[in-house]
Amino acid sequence: MKCSTLLCVDDDSSTRKMYQTLLGSYGYDVAVAEDANQALDRLRAPNSAVDAVIVDYDMPGMKGSQLAGELKRTDPELPVIMVSGSRPPEEELGRSVDAVFEKGSSVQTIVDRLESLLAAKKTSHLAKYISLASALAAVALAALLAPKSWK
Image (cartoon, rainbow, N blue to C red; front, side, top):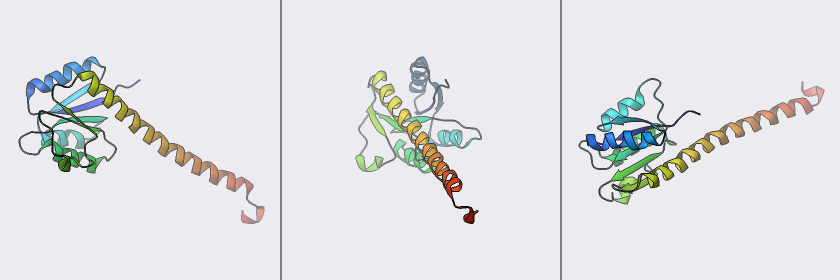
């Protein structure tokens, strides 16, 4: 089974290393970026495969909430988790952030929420294929049952 790839965006190098170590120990492939520009470059790169993003709120340049908005415009189904030292204003988060945790929250709590978001994303993708398969089956059945005069 392919492990999920996470992109962790934080301006603090020790936090990035912590994400790599801790989330890596849970079996994730962890890529890091030190700011929003690096994160967006990584996501726009050919063959980029990121399953979810963990982003800091308070970063120089583009805030985490602004980055989350850009990420969701690119891929509305991409799970985005924000980890922050202070609670970001709700009006800044909108629908761009799927979960918010305070720095210092247990890694297990974050991983549990991450797993539920990844499972929901996978289910959403499967539902699209099932809908397409159902539509194709209906067309095939209609073609089989259609009177010869229609053919």
